[in-house]
Length: 213
View (cartoon, helix red, strand yellow):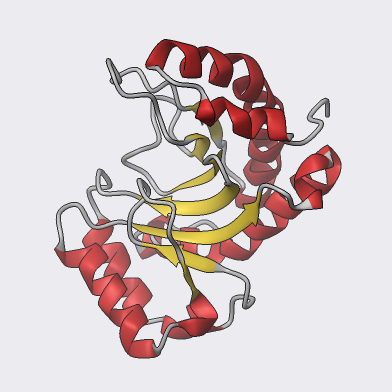
């Protein structure tokens, strides 16, 4: 694998003013790394899940004026797109990298998935303490699972279920200065470890007859 990790130069892309300049930096600095990392991760997930997983890299094609505040890769079981499907993400803002299992608002069966999660709250409690959860993929903020009460977690899951724009993202954040980001092999192994721990959530989000063992 040619992926060498993320450097401060990559994070600095988000300090560039203007859509064209920032997109040029994202395309030249970050997207080639996403291609390398995402290809390796999608191959591993394909073997883990026993079904083909496809890499998608965010193009930000709808943006006409405002430059993106973050960028990401998505890995899903659909070749044509990922936003309507449960998917794994690796991405970055100007100050951190995120590794998510993402269920965003475009997912048609999110209410059913939310109900399954509400029935299995202990799954969240059993994740390592450094895992975080977010109700909105557009925002930097995330909540440490170890600091959430069962009631707070239930409220977040019900919002995901009941609010049209409700979302659910589970995973980890890595601050820009974290040494693991600067070592390609180390971060690949780290991201894969996070995704492996989230596979039970991925499987649970599907109808029972569609789950993959």
